[in-house]
Image: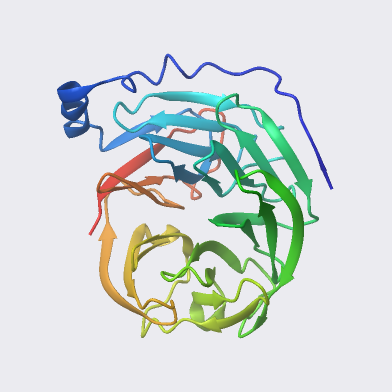
Length: 311
């Protein structure tokens, strides 16, 4: 089921995103001095991040589903889309080249889409999920994980990214569903033929390679590496960055083309990490929101974003 929501009002962000109009050598100088971190609004409770082709990052709020956009050159930003309230959080999110955001609605059991130009919430799909966690875009669909049920949600996408019908794909094969939180982040394999889903239960935490049509899962061979706190993964070429939130680190793997095997090649840590959850990349840097799950959230709790170099 779905329905359209008219935009109540677009919060100002254009002026706050100063620096987007920088040109020539001025832009280059700004990039050289772009911040290695920047604050998010107090009480925002970030979880997901996505970055498009322009130097803008989008963050979803667990507090009320708001979307915050930040200029990565200046670190400044603002809320561009109001959420639907405390019962409708935004967890994982991805943006496409058509100016649309695809949002995972967490415990609301929703999939949502937002027009980044107007801030309008376009569509809301109530799929009955128990915790819709993360999303990845493929050429024909947006695919979402559910952390408490052994299934994925497939939201069809048209030629220009427009959302269509939703179908459910049960997970099978080697998939091991725990009694608690199980499926987390999702990515594509390097060859683009299958999906990679973090399973925090199987084998002490690992990756599963999932056939997108059938849902049949097989364990990815990561050697002795485990992902007990694995969260939002990021694939760049054949390099997979897997955030381990509670461990305050990123494990880096080199995958084969099919995504059936991976070799640990690096581990990234930083004293500024405060339970980062997901990661996105732009211009040689990785950007991670600190979710701070180790503190009781209040309207005054401080949140920020940390940037580190890619390996």
